[in-house]
Length: 199
Image (cartoon, rainbow, N blue to C red; front, side, top):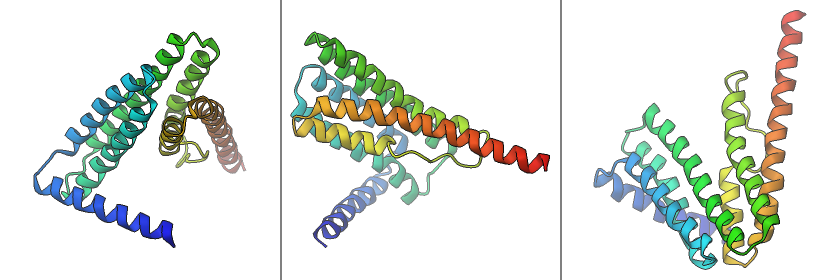
């Protein structure tokens, strides 16, 4: 009940922000680009070990990530290009944030976590790529449980609660498992379709 009330309260605030931004005719694409700028500041905070700041900045960047699509819907300015730009910018943001972590671990001379952060980055990018490529072949490929929103939440929790090492492990393992899941799911769907056509 309390969680639901908090969710309703947050939605009300976001709806008001969206309404003001659409009233001011702020371009959704501008909000998308501003989100990646926030990622640059987040990466800088991570690289210098200021995890508290980086957690707050990740929350702010996540807010802008939600706002661009919402503003586009409210202002009836949704476009295919806007959706494409948002997807590309999200990948840039993923790279930038994880690069901040790689720099942090590199400066601390923690080679294991440099490699692990690279593995997490690989899984993060390939999660979306696997879905995009699969959906050129099958109708939908949304399987797996570690997409971008979940990864961002894990990073926020790791940053705010002094658990970044654990967060990197979770993202490295489960983002790549999501990629493998999507590969296997796509193969299964293609085999089923092939057997139907051959039958």
